[in-house]
Image (cartoon, rainbow, N blue to C red):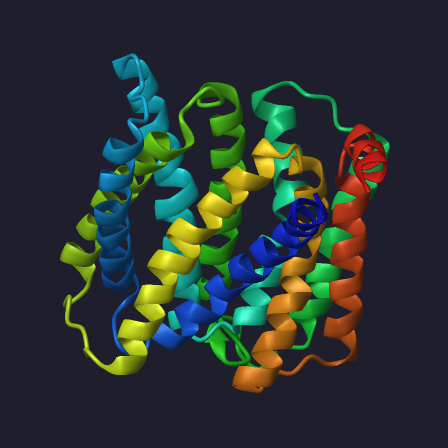
Length: 305
Protein backbone atom coordinates (compact mmCIF):
# COMPACT_ATOMS: atom_id res chain seq x y z
CA UNK A 1 0.00 0.00 0.00
CA UNK A 2 2.82 2.39 0.93
CA UNK A 3 4.68 1.47 -2.24
CA UNK A 4 1.57 2.09 -4.36
CA UNK A 5 0.97 5.51 -2.77
CA UNK A 6 4.62 6.45 -3.20
CA UNK A 7 4.62 5.49 -6.88
CA UNK A 8 1.43 7.46 -7.55
CA UNK A 9 3.04 10.54 -5.98
CA UNK A 10 6.31 10.17 -7.87
CA UNK A 11 4.76 9.34 -11.25
CA UNK A 12 3.61 12.89 -12.14
CA UNK A 13 7.01 14.34 -11.25
CA UNK A 14 8.79 11.69 -13.32
CA UNK A 15 6.42 12.31 -16.22
CA UNK A 16 7.01 16.08 -16.17
CA UNK A 17 10.77 15.60 -16.03
CA UNK A 18 10.70 13.19 -18.99
CA UNK A 19 8.50 15.59 -20.94
CA UNK A 20 10.84 18.49 -20.21
CA UNK A 21 13.80 16.60 -21.66
CA UNK A 22 12.16 16.63 -25.09
CA UNK A 23 13.45 20.14 -25.79
CA UNK A 24 16.96 19.19 -24.68
CA UNK A 25 16.91 15.95 -26.66
CA UNK A 26 16.01 17.96 -29.76
CA UNK A 27 18.97 20.26 -29.21
CA UNK A 28 21.32 17.30 -28.71
CA UNK A 29 20.10 15.48 -31.83
CA UNK A 30 19.79 18.32 -34.34
CA UNK A 31 23.54 18.78 -34.96
CA UNK A 32 23.51 15.28 -36.50
CA UNK A 33 20.29 15.40 -38.56
CA UNK A 34 17.86 17.93 -39.97
CA UNK A 35 14.67 18.51 -37.95
CA UNK A 36 12.09 16.62 -39.99
CA UNK A 37 14.54 13.86 -40.88
CA UNK A 38 15.18 13.32 -37.17
CA UNK A 39 11.44 13.25 -36.47
CA UNK A 40 10.88 10.78 -39.31
CA UNK A 41 13.33 8.34 -37.71
CA UNK A 42 11.78 8.96 -34.28
CA UNK A 43 8.21 8.31 -35.42
CA UNK A 44 9.17 5.28 -37.55
CA UNK A 45 10.94 3.61 -34.62
CA UNK A 46 8.04 4.51 -32.30
CA UNK A 47 5.60 2.77 -34.66
CA UNK A 48 7.83 -0.32 -34.72
CA UNK A 49 7.68 -0.48 -30.92
CA UNK A 50 3.96 0.25 -30.61
CA UNK A 51 2.73 -2.24 -33.22
CA UNK A 52 3.71 -5.45 -31.37
CA UNK A 53 2.41 -4.01 -28.08
CA UNK A 54 -1.02 -3.58 -29.65
CA UNK A 55 -1.13 -7.15 -30.90
CA UNK A 56 0.29 -8.66 -27.71
CA UNK A 57 -2.20 -6.79 -25.53
CA UNK A 58 -5.00 -7.23 -28.10
CA UNK A 59 -5.95 -3.58 -27.99
CA UNK A 60 -9.12 -2.60 -29.92
CA UNK A 61 -8.97 -0.58 -33.11
CA UNK A 62 -11.28 2.36 -33.99
CA UNK A 63 -14.73 1.17 -35.04
CA UNK A 64 -15.22 3.50 -38.04
CA UNK A 65 -13.37 5.34 -40.78
CA UNK A 66 -14.57 8.62 -39.32
CA UNK A 67 -12.84 7.79 -36.02
CA UNK A 68 -9.62 6.96 -37.89
CA UNK A 69 -9.87 10.28 -39.77
CA UNK A 70 -10.27 12.23 -36.52
CA UNK A 71 -7.26 10.45 -35.01
CA UNK A 72 -5.27 11.24 -38.15
CA UNK A 73 -6.04 14.95 -37.90
CA UNK A 74 -5.29 15.04 -34.17
CA UNK A 75 -1.98 13.25 -34.70
CA UNK A 76 -0.99 15.67 -37.45
CA UNK A 77 -1.63 18.63 -35.14
CA UNK A 78 -0.35 17.22 -31.82
CA UNK A 79 2.74 15.39 -33.07
CA UNK A 80 3.58 16.42 -36.63
CA UNK A 81 3.16 20.20 -36.83
CA UNK A 82 3.74 20.78 -33.11
CA UNK A 83 7.04 18.90 -32.83
CA UNK A 84 8.10 19.88 -36.34
CA UNK A 85 7.84 23.56 -35.41
CA UNK A 86 9.78 23.11 -32.16
CA UNK A 87 12.58 21.14 -33.80
CA UNK A 88 12.87 23.63 -36.69
CA UNK A 89 12.95 26.63 -34.34
CA UNK A 90 15.68 25.05 -32.21
CA UNK A 91 17.60 24.20 -35.39
CA UNK A 92 17.40 27.88 -36.34
CA UNK A 93 19.02 28.80 -33.03
CA UNK A 94 16.14 29.42 -30.63
CA UNK A 95 17.20 28.44 -27.08
CA UNK A 96 15.50 25.33 -25.71
CA UNK A 97 14.40 27.21 -22.60
CA UNK A 98 12.72 29.95 -24.62
CA UNK A 99 10.91 27.43 -26.83
CA UNK A 100 9.57 25.71 -23.69
CA UNK A 101 8.33 29.05 -22.33
CA UNK A 102 6.39 29.77 -25.52
CA UNK A 103 4.81 26.30 -25.53
CA UNK A 104 4.16 26.83 -21.81
CA UNK A 105 1.41 29.23 -22.91
CA UNK A 106 -0.53 26.21 -24.22
CA UNK A 107 -3.30 26.34 -21.56
CA UNK A 108 -3.88 29.97 -22.51
CA UNK A 109 -3.96 29.08 -26.18
CA UNK A 110 -6.40 26.26 -25.46
CA UNK A 111 -8.71 28.69 -23.63
CA UNK A 112 -8.79 30.93 -26.70
CA UNK A 113 -9.30 28.04 -29.14
CA UNK A 114 -12.01 26.51 -26.94
CA UNK A 115 -13.87 29.80 -26.83
CA UNK A 116 -13.91 29.87 -30.64
CA UNK A 117 -14.38 26.18 -31.52
CA UNK A 118 -16.52 24.96 -28.63
CA UNK A 119 -18.22 28.23 -27.67
CA UNK A 120 -16.88 27.77 -24.14
CA UNK A 121 -17.09 30.89 -22.01
CA UNK A 122 -13.74 32.40 -21.01
CA UNK A 123 -13.93 34.06 -17.60
CA UNK A 124 -12.41 37.42 -16.70
CA UNK A 125 -9.94 35.50 -14.53
CA UNK A 126 -8.80 33.49 -17.57
CA UNK A 127 -8.50 36.60 -19.76
CA UNK A 128 -6.38 38.19 -17.02
CA UNK A 129 -4.20 35.08 -17.02
CA UNK A 130 -3.89 35.30 -20.80
CA UNK A 131 -2.81 38.92 -20.56
CA UNK A 132 -0.22 38.21 -17.86
CA UNK A 133 1.13 35.24 -19.82
CA UNK A 134 1.55 37.31 -22.98
CA UNK A 135 3.19 40.11 -20.95
CA UNK A 136 5.60 37.57 -19.46
CA UNK A 137 6.45 36.27 -22.94
CA UNK A 138 7.13 39.86 -24.04
CA UNK A 139 9.55 40.28 -21.12
CA UNK A 140 11.36 37.10 -22.14
CA UNK A 141 11.61 38.19 -25.77
CA UNK A 142 12.51 41.82 -24.97
CA UNK A 143 16.06 40.87 -23.89
CA UNK A 144 16.57 39.06 -27.17
CA UNK A 145 15.47 41.73 -29.64
CA UNK A 146 18.16 43.13 -31.88
CA UNK A 147 16.91 46.67 -32.42
CA UNK A 148 19.43 47.24 -35.21
CA UNK A 149 17.64 44.76 -37.47
CA UNK A 150 13.94 44.23 -38.08
CA UNK A 151 14.05 40.53 -38.87
CA UNK A 152 16.56 39.15 -36.41
CA UNK A 153 16.36 38.35 -32.72
CA UNK A 154 19.56 37.92 -30.76
CA UNK A 155 20.82 34.50 -31.80
CA UNK A 156 17.99 33.39 -34.11
CA UNK A 157 15.81 34.67 -36.99
CA UNK A 158 12.33 36.05 -36.43
CA UNK A 159 10.97 33.06 -38.37
CA UNK A 160 11.92 30.83 -35.44
CA UNK A 161 9.49 32.80 -33.29
CA UNK A 162 6.81 32.63 -35.98
CA UNK A 163 7.07 28.86 -36.31
CA UNK A 164 6.97 28.47 -32.52
CA UNK A 165 3.69 30.37 -32.46
CA UNK A 166 2.43 27.97 -35.14
CA UNK A 167 3.48 25.07 -32.89
CA UNK A 168 1.66 26.62 -29.95
CA UNK A 169 -1.53 27.05 -31.99
CA UNK A 170 -1.17 23.54 -33.40
CA UNK A 171 -0.91 21.80 -30.01
CA UNK A 172 -3.72 23.97 -28.61
CA UNK A 173 -6.01 23.22 -31.55
CA UNK A 174 -4.97 19.56 -31.53
CA UNK A 175 -5.81 19.06 -27.86
CA UNK A 176 -9.23 20.69 -28.31
CA UNK A 177 -9.83 18.60 -31.43
CA UNK A 178 -8.89 15.44 -29.57
CA UNK A 179 -11.17 16.38 -26.68
CA UNK A 180 -14.08 16.84 -29.06
CA UNK A 181 -13.61 13.97 -31.51
CA UNK A 182 -11.15 11.41 -30.03
CA UNK A 183 -12.08 11.17 -26.35
CA UNK A 184 -13.12 7.51 -26.62
CA UNK A 185 -10.01 6.26 -28.42
CA UNK A 186 -7.93 3.37 -27.12
CA UNK A 187 -4.77 5.04 -25.86
CA UNK A 188 -2.32 2.63 -27.56
CA UNK A 189 -3.97 1.91 -30.92
CA UNK A 190 -5.14 5.52 -31.16
CA UNK A 191 -1.61 6.75 -30.48
CA UNK A 192 -0.25 4.48 -33.23
CA UNK A 193 -2.67 5.99 -35.74
CA UNK A 194 -1.73 9.48 -34.62
CA UNK A 195 1.97 8.77 -34.93
CA UNK A 196 1.35 7.26 -38.37
CA UNK A 197 -0.15 10.49 -39.71
CA UNK A 198 2.63 12.52 -38.08
CA UNK A 199 5.23 10.21 -39.65
CA UNK A 200 3.79 10.66 -43.15
CA UNK A 201 3.74 14.44 -42.65
CA UNK A 202 7.34 14.82 -41.46
CA UNK A 203 8.54 12.31 -44.09
CA UNK A 204 6.90 14.40 -46.82
CA UNK A 205 8.44 17.64 -45.50
CA UNK A 206 11.87 16.01 -45.14
CA UNK A 207 11.68 14.59 -48.67
CA UNK A 208 10.92 17.99 -50.20
CA UNK A 209 12.99 20.41 -48.12
CA UNK A 210 15.81 18.38 -46.53
CA UNK A 211 18.72 16.31 -47.78
CA UNK A 212 17.84 13.42 -45.47
CA UNK A 213 21.42 12.79 -44.41
CA UNK A 214 22.24 11.64 -40.89
CA UNK A 215 25.60 11.68 -39.13
CA UNK A 216 25.36 8.36 -37.29
CA UNK A 217 27.27 8.64 -34.05
CA UNK A 218 26.91 7.53 -30.45
CA UNK A 219 25.42 10.87 -29.29
CA UNK A 220 22.83 10.78 -32.08
CA UNK A 221 21.86 7.16 -31.44
CA UNK A 222 21.60 7.86 -27.71
CA UNK A 223 19.36 10.90 -28.12
CA UNK A 224 17.22 9.13 -30.73
CA UNK A 225 16.79 6.15 -28.41
CA UNK A 226 15.72 8.47 -25.58
CA UNK A 227 13.26 10.29 -27.82
CA UNK A 228 11.66 6.99 -28.83
CA UNK A 229 11.77 5.00 -25.59
CA UNK A 230 11.69 7.79 -23.04
CA UNK A 231 9.42 10.35 -24.70
CA UNK A 232 7.27 8.72 -27.37
CA UNK A 233 6.80 5.42 -25.49
CA UNK A 234 7.70 5.88 -21.80
CA UNK A 235 5.94 9.20 -21.26
CA UNK A 236 2.74 7.88 -22.87
CA UNK A 237 2.68 4.70 -20.77
CA UNK A 238 3.40 6.71 -17.63
CA UNK A 239 0.53 9.04 -18.47
CA UNK A 240 -1.75 6.01 -18.93
CA UNK A 241 -0.83 4.71 -15.47
CA UNK A 242 -1.55 8.08 -13.87
CA UNK A 243 -4.91 8.38 -15.59
CA UNK A 244 -5.91 4.91 -14.36
CA UNK A 245 -5.14 6.09 -10.81
CA UNK A 246 -7.30 9.18 -11.34
CA UNK A 247 -4.34 11.53 -11.08
CA UNK A 248 -5.01 13.51 -14.26
CA UNK A 249 -6.00 16.71 -12.41
CA UNK A 250 -2.77 16.69 -10.40
CA UNK A 251 -0.79 16.04 -13.57
CA UNK A 252 -2.25 19.20 -15.12
CA UNK A 253 -0.91 21.28 -12.24
CA UNK A 254 2.59 19.81 -12.62
CA UNK A 255 2.72 20.85 -16.28
CA UNK A 256 3.34 24.41 -15.19
CA UNK A 257 6.79 23.36 -14.00
CA UNK A 258 7.97 22.26 -17.45
CA UNK A 259 9.14 25.65 -18.77
CA UNK A 260 11.25 26.64 -15.72
CA UNK A 261 12.54 23.07 -15.49
CA UNK A 262 13.70 23.19 -19.13
CA UNK A 263 15.28 26.61 -18.52
CA UNK A 264 17.19 25.26 -15.51
CA UNK A 265 18.46 22.20 -17.42
CA UNK A 266 19.34 24.29 -20.48
CA UNK A 267 21.31 26.68 -18.25
CA UNK A 268 23.30 23.77 -16.82
CA UNK A 269 23.81 21.86 -20.08
CA UNK A 270 24.01 24.59 -22.72
CA UNK A 271 24.84 27.78 -20.76
CA UNK A 272 21.51 29.34 -21.75
CA UNK A 273 21.21 32.31 -19.41
CA UNK A 274 18.21 34.30 -18.22
CA UNK A 275 18.41 38.00 -17.41
CA UNK A 276 16.24 39.81 -14.90
CA UNK A 277 13.50 40.61 -17.43
CA UNK A 278 13.41 36.99 -18.63
CA UNK A 279 13.20 35.68 -15.06
CA UNK A 280 10.33 38.08 -14.37
CA UNK A 281 8.71 36.88 -17.56
CA UNK A 282 8.91 33.25 -16.45
CA UNK A 283 7.14 34.16 -13.18
CA UNK A 284 4.42 36.06 -15.05
CA UNK A 285 3.88 33.18 -17.50
CA UNK A 286 3.54 30.65 -14.67
CA UNK A 287 1.18 32.93 -12.73
CA UNK A 288 -0.85 33.72 -15.84
CA UNK A 289 -1.25 30.05 -16.76
CA UNK A 290 -2.28 29.30 -13.18
CA UNK A 291 -4.98 31.98 -13.34
CA UNK A 292 -6.22 30.69 -16.70
CA UNK A 293 -6.70 27.19 -15.32
CA UNK A 294 -10.43 26.50 -14.75
CA UNK A 295 -11.35 27.13 -11.10
CA UNK A 296 -13.11 23.78 -10.73
CA UNK A 297 -9.89 22.01 -11.78
CA UNK A 298 -7.92 23.97 -9.19
CA UNK A 299 -10.39 22.98 -6.47
CA UNK A 300 -10.30 19.34 -7.60
CA UNK A 301 -6.52 19.37 -7.59
CA UNK A 302 -6.49 20.79 -4.05
CA UNK A 303 -8.78 18.00 -2.88
CA UNK A 304 -6.55 15.40 -4.53
CA UNK A 305 -3.48 16.81 -2.84
